[in-house]
Length: 331
Image (cartoon, rainbow, N blue to C red; front, top):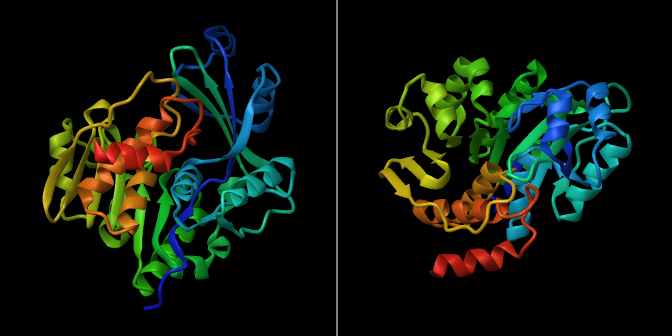
């Protein structure tokens, strides 16, 4: 087997994140549930966008955030996700490529606009998201960069993208390509509601194709329809090579052939914005994994990355994450 060009190739929704600070009054006036993610159409997204103040716009989406954080740590990464050839599409492509990420997905010439996610952060650090998926859900098998998948140690799949049938086929195409090339496949469950909609499909994918599974406490319990984390962790054992299960302030648990290994959460300062904590955890974990670290160290790296992200606005670390990680791993 040849040496891979990439550590990780991610596949997910290509969305432009629009991050802005606001107050509860806007949420109330728009009838938005604080802390929730609501899917909206283009008109609803534009209506709220016109009411907010200054914002930061950057490439986003769950898997894209993970890939961006990994790139910041020094990993070699690729990403696949669909945008339209419009203003937001150009912002997404320029931003993710500026991080050194290989991104070659052809933009759509027509159809829905590039997706965007309006992230409304209130003073209590809660983030309320309005997501217009737009062109991102039109990712299909033809959009899979087969050479990038073959040349990546791990192909990372975003559960949020599982809804459309073309995307399901794209995931299966990518997973088979990775397996045939002797590479590994990773999946993030993304959201409990996602799990409820696709439980049977996810179980089939995990048992048949996934080497590394990422899920939080609510997602893994939803997957196995049980009432306790311990039950869920016991059930996932043996269904995939590694399950990295996050538990917020309780840290994470890694399930593998070595059993269950609990890793405490990294110390953090004041929590500002929880956007992207799970994405950052996956980034830190996969970075450690692709660099040959043991699983406990991978989980520590994931926790450090998540801890850095929640102490600032947005899903990308504003500080030197690599330096912070090296310092905290020594502590």
